[in-house]
Image 1 (cartoon, rainbow over the protein chains, first blue to last red):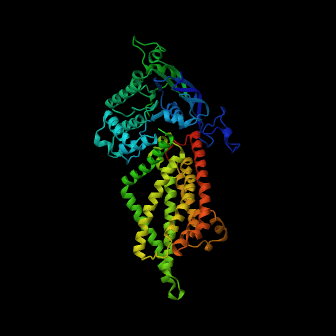
Image 2 (image 1 turned 135 degrees about the vertical axis):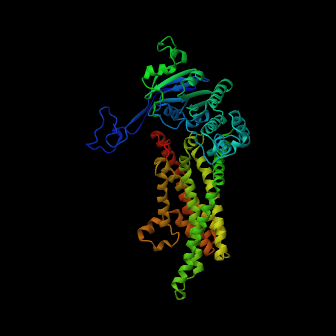
Image 3 (image 1 turned 90 degrees about the vertical axis):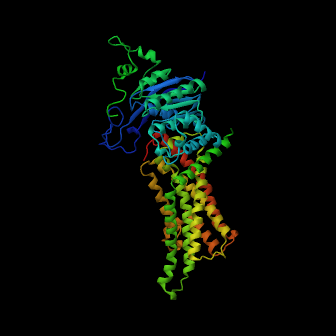
Amino acid sequence: MTAAIYVDDVYKAFGKPDAERRLHLPWRAPASNGHSNGKNGHKPTVVAVDHVSFAVQPGEIFGVLGPNGSGKSTLIRLLSTLLLPDSGQIRIFGHDVDQEAMEVQRLINRVSVEASFFKKLSPMENLLYGARLYGLDGRETRAQVVVILTRLGLEDRAIRNPMEQMSRGMQQKVAIARALLSRPRILLLDEPTTGLDPRSKREVQAVVRELQQKEGTTILLTTHDMTEAENLCDRIAIMDRGKVVALDTPPNLRALVPGSNGTQPTLEDVFLELTGRQLVTEEE
Amino acid sequence: MSTAIHQLRASYAFMERNANLVKRYWSWEIVWLTYSVANALSVSYIGLGMEKLSGESAGLDGRFLVLYLIIGTLVWHFLSVIFYWITDVISIERWEGTIEYTLMAPIHRITHMAGQTFFALLYSMIFNTIILIVAVLLFEIDLSRANLLGGAVMLLAGSLSFIGVGISGSVLPLLFPERGSQMTHVLIAVMLLISGVYYPIEVLPEFLQKLSVLSPATYVLVGARAALLDGAPLAQLWPQIWPVLLMGLIAIPGGLKIFNLAERYAKRTGKLHRNG
């Protein structure tokens, strides 16, 4: 069976390595590891995704856990055709994200942590715009928007007011609705519940589960929320500094570390054991 | 659903979105319209001012100068508004933070640009019509000799090349998130200088006159003035029409190619994500 998402040895770095710079000045010596260290006037090279490989099966909910800066969002952008990998290969239902971008784009949609909209436009106007980009009919979309947003707990009045008048949580629900309208076979959710109140979180999580069960949608979810990951995901990859440091089902991941004081280890215990880092630092 | 219907709907998405934005920012549109009308009138009054300053003995025809200047203003307004709407294709989405959602949608870039362009044409026509009506009423302009159809043909033919230049210019905000939008002003300022918008290009230094051959606006202005001031028939306008058609034929596919290359570069270097 063709994997819904196939990621093979993908590498992505930002900032030019010194070897690619045109101007070599003697006082701008490269760092000993071959990457710029940021002390020579250039931005340092940042390895965002470091030789990552995994496959997600159709209908699976696949979680990606990691602290900020671990490469989760870069990975999602690579899957969304918004970034090109430096090396390695990504296939979406057999289509290469670089060579067959249009085919890939028809199969996916994405919800990012920032609910990005035209703030002066209403949810209806924003969603109509988004739906037409996917070739959907205007009349059908208008009806669908009301159904989906009502299901997500938005009042009818809010659907026609400018987005700038909505709370962040409500905007995030509209972002989810935008992704659902195109009925993607793969939904990429980049921290979709960050900033939502507990009730909204549950509503979103229920929609995610329903999508998998009723539509068979494959879902890749990045989150900081351990409970969310454990409740929703069939398998979880833990990322740290661009690398996948563990990948398994939640019970198997928990089995990687011993319990203490007679209690079962949590996913957070597993993460700390594997990376030695907090999921979200205090500053974040 | 066929690909053609999908792309048509997607193209319409940009027109509808822009119309909704104009509707929501209506107060800004009134400010912009007032500015545009005032600007056009101010420039046109220079014609009457010249007649007055030179005195009757100089034999200057103030009415002719007003018409000369107002044609320049209208043509320039029409073309520059199209240019700015097209170059805004990226900067407006960077401002709103929606660029990633638009660029990950399954649409061809030509679909994207076509929607933006049709809206720009419509928007520019409406603005220009309002300015023209105000000018006709205020200056009692006599257009009885004018070949209005010829003027319109000249404008539409010229808009093709401005669309191409606009598409090329739109890569600047894509490549330079912080200052790319401002860089597009350089293109338009140079064209304003060399195209003879408010004066005949013969008054320019020789090296600038040579450059004016490269600006599509030069041909549009010469053609539009011939049509509207002298009532030149379409056949006489052909020497001005074919160069701008040729420029459009090169500039539009060239602009799309440049845009595709820039988009690929932005995706390789991660420039799409940064909001300037």
